[in-house]
Image (tube, rainbow over all chains, first blue to last red):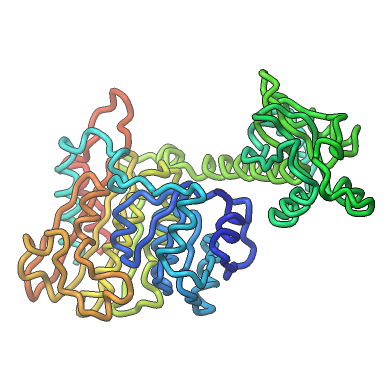
Length: 145
Length: 327
């Protein structure tokens, strides 16, 4: 689903400038708990949230999310909008509540982001052989303090 | 644009397939729809024309000009079939973009329906799609070049030593929510510049961010995030000087949290941080002593070079320099 479709479907407005409205979002994930968000695979997805602070932008950045949709008419402080623009994550805002936002998007065909653990699929073999490295780093970290 | 950039655009026009850049989700109308309905669709979807189809078979195209004519002549309740254009200029999804550019120039139309080998409509192409597609491909090409320039392997090849690693160190201040995430953002950027696999970058960025939030939320005086990158692994150390964790086993339980409510209101403190770090890294180690401080290490292994010896850093290899020398 393209960003302009998300805007139309949720009657949202764009808070950040310079966004590519043709940007495509692959899936959706709704939560106000950023640690829950980081647990799941949000790659190229839309983060739907009622939480309006800088950590939402940082979370989306770390998780490789495509865009953020703020619900319930929330606004973002100017410096947070600037941060989102800097890291290239468009932020949309709708007056709809979380339930209706998700319902409309789902009905329009946006699927839920995969529920697997972050990075689980790409974990590589060799971890067993690697415990030495962790100990090493750990030990040297101790020495560093 | 320099001449080499122009050359690159031309090259892309010959390389890119129409199917790569066309819009796949085509809005279509059926021949029996009325012109009034078409007018509404064009207005609602903010488009200037749409293909007319029976199933996926293209039978015509109706544009905003046709709607204007219909309005002028009072034909709005007539079916599309009687107002649409049936002289169709189409392109194939497997054709190169240069074919589409020629078709645009030759016919003067604004949009080209795209058909597959079975004559079925699979997309639509506008000049905007071409511009966007070429720019995107150009950006990707530049990104590739940039990554190549900064590839970790090049760093390691260009500056040979017996055990080369890149160390990044960040200071994290306690309770500074304005800057929280800055270190992890920079970690992510650095790993990208070093050409690390994007999936690994993402895992490490998430681990670093959770660790950084822990330093911001729970420590007495902040701490450090140290990231070490080698050809074999990326390692993260989050170290602080206290207060330390009284019960490490309990701290590792998903859902266990000592964070106050105001932290929860910021979207954190759900007791998932450590368990998230464990989930997205290959190795995690938590060591803490109340009153002394906490050391969290997490490692993600990179694909080992085939047949290479010593993929895992051994005692002797990592004992010289590194984090110890950094202190």
